[in-house]
Length: 437
Figure 1 (cartoon, rainbow, N blue to C red):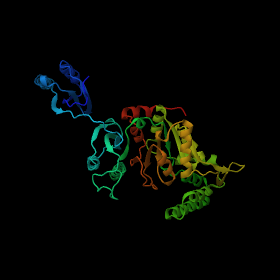
Figure 2 (figure 1 turned 60 degrees about the horizontal axis):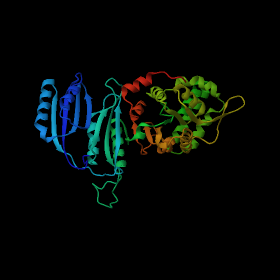
Figure 3 (figure 1 turned 90 degrees about the vertical axis):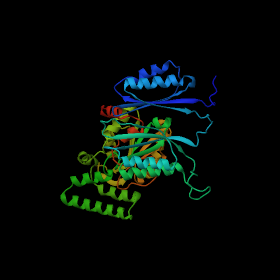
């Protein structure tokens, strides 16, 4: 048996030609007679050009014959051929703990600016990160242009740019993630960085916030606006003025958290939830891609959940509309006549409660938190995002700067499918199929 630690010569062959021709099959039969062993192969298509790189062990006693046949094949088949002979390095036992593969995914609604890609590769170069491969996940006809890079990242503390034991030393992965997400915001490009391993492709639960995530507004404010629309002019004017005042106090920082929520809930005292819901659909605006994403996730067998501080009757309504599996929101109490009292049953669904609900769901579904994708943003979603194996923040008025794995600038939730490694054509096909609610 051949010793794999002994250095040997390798032949690296790169061929480029029209994707319409079956020249690769013919080429492999040309070199087959030399009994070469395939060490590696990679192929990608850009436009109408197909490029294939093949790495094989090189038999030096037949080198002139192999090279001659390769060049002749390229000439006769209108295929551009390049080759290089390299000495294979001796293999070493390298621990995989310090160098892990990470997938860097980025997308934009029209085209990704070259400037973004230039700065992204500059960040990786600064941290001495080499790319393993790059590919386009979307099709040319897709509404989103999406790409993925896979690179080996040194997840230990960087010592290349700082003095040993210096207080300026930093975690390389954290720094790279921060810089990439900052670039995404600068160029309005959806960006994500996550470990490229089995769990990257085997998520089981996707948990969403409701406000500014599945819908393009604050959930409680929508219900209040519905109440305003159903009221007489004088009552509507008063309600709107009181809501505006509460929002001003919240913006000033004098009315925050549960207190801000409970004050707004009291504005609904005396209104019938069932009557309010008759007006909701006129005000409800789903985020771009929400319906298509939920259809596709359902088709793929993922469980989906809404974890929201919004009124439970609105959360349940959205769950039915999108065909989701679980929905949790604040329980608004009613009197004997079915009218809202302005009070909320405890425990209130806030940041802590959302985190508890997410952990409860994982136990119920018998999965780990690393198999969860959480999508949302703002203070009420922060703890839920911090627990999930993949955290995706969405641009919105109260967005936080917490460290996450992905950030959506374009607001199309269909990007989530690409983060799961699903290609554009498949994503589109699944999202267009109907589901049964």
